[in-house]
Image (cartoon, rainbow, N blue to C red):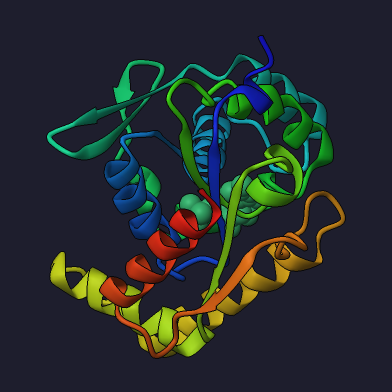
Amino acid sequence: MNSMTDYPVLTIDGPSGSGKGTIAQLMAKELGWHYLDSGAIYRVLAQAAIKHHIEFDDELALAELASELKVVFTIEDDQLIVRLEDEDVSTLIRSEQAGNAASKVAVLPTVRAALLQRQRDFCQSPGLVTDGRDMGTVIFPHAVYKVFLSASAEERAQRRYKQLKEKGIESNLSDLIIEISERDVRDSQRTAAPLRPADDALLLDSTTMGIDAVFERVRAHCSDEL
Ligand code: C5P
């Protein structure tokens, strides 16, 4: 059975902080489909590299680590729990530093190739909602529904600043804008699977939209195509 084509897929791609994770999780719940947070895989890989003292430019060792990565995703009390080698790393991988580290290992083509089938294997009955950078272009090019969600770097940094504040973590807005912009450049300018909308994706700029409005728009898009 070819899992790439047998079950419907909704891909939501976009830069960091665009709200794609939130929308993807809401849509997975709405449709009753599985959910893949592909960014978490790159975040876990970077964490595993640090744990095993592998340098971020050692492409061969990183690709080997990627193909053997012992990562398990579960949903517990509506939360995505991520375990690396049996250790709960759900909180650890969400820091800005972990995101930056992920984007450094994600530029490497052999690493991406080593993670390709692992991501496709998430496509199970009755369907899959997935978010990332190359979901609609490389991993699930035949997805029935594709969305590309963006927002200005300033707005995304503001959202991140608010999230961190709610968690009691102090941060600096100007630093966040710089970090987000640097990650955008790294993700969009790499040669392997750069961040870009699929030709058949619905383009949504959420800079001035609330989460509810974005959700309604994506939901309508999926029912249009049914
Ligand atoms: O989406 P998230 O911020 O968790 O992704 C972390 C990093 O992982 C991104 O900045 C990007 O470099 C990389 N990534 C990727 N391809 C994906 C998902 C994430 O290259 N499909």
